[in-house]
Length: 221
Image (cartoon, rainbow, N blue to C red; front, side, top):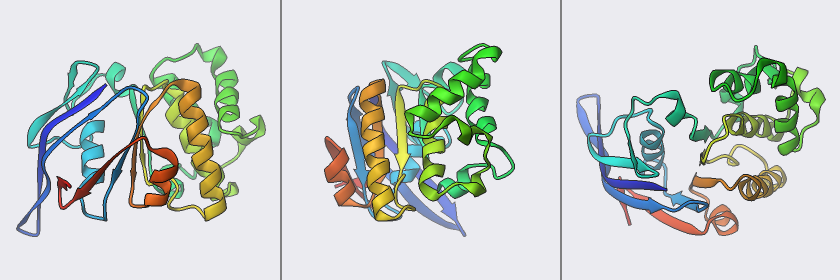
C-alpha cells in the first residue's frame, strides 16, 4: 500500500540545521490503522506532510500501490490520500457554509455531476452522523465535535484510499473524543480505508491501531 524508504528531511531555522527526519523506513498495508506515536518535535507530522506531498524530502522515496509519489502530483493521485487535521476550528473556512466546504472536493475531483452534488453532500453528512440541515450552517454555529465530523466528511468526499489523521481528537473533550474515535472506526470499515493515525496519546492508540511506530528526534525507536 504505502512504502516509506529511507526518508530524511532537514530544516534550517535561524541559521541552525534541524534534522526533522533521519532515515525513516516503514510499510503500511491496505486497511491498516497504522499509528505513529511520538512527542512534539519527534518528526511525525513532518513525515505526514511528506506522504501528502506538502513537503519534499531531502532523500528517500514514498510509494503508493507500486507507484512512486513526488511532491508534485496530479489530481488523480492527490485524491487518494486525504488529511484530517488536529484543530477543526482552524481548518474550516468561517465564511463558507458546510455545503461549500464539502462540495468543493466533489467539484475539483469531478466525483459526481453538478446536479448530484447536494444529494452527495447529504449522504456524506449522514456518514458522519450529521443531518442534512447542517449543510446550510457556518462553522461558528457548530460544536468542536461537529466541526471535526464536517472535516472528516470533507476528507471522504474525494473517495480516498488513505486518511492521514493528525491528532484528530486532541482538541476535543473526552466524551466527544470517544464518539469521534468510534465514528472513525466505523467509517474505516464501511469504506475499506487505510489510516495513518498520528498521536502522542497511547490510550487512543490502544483503542484504534493495529500497528504502531514510535518516533523520537526524527528516528524510529
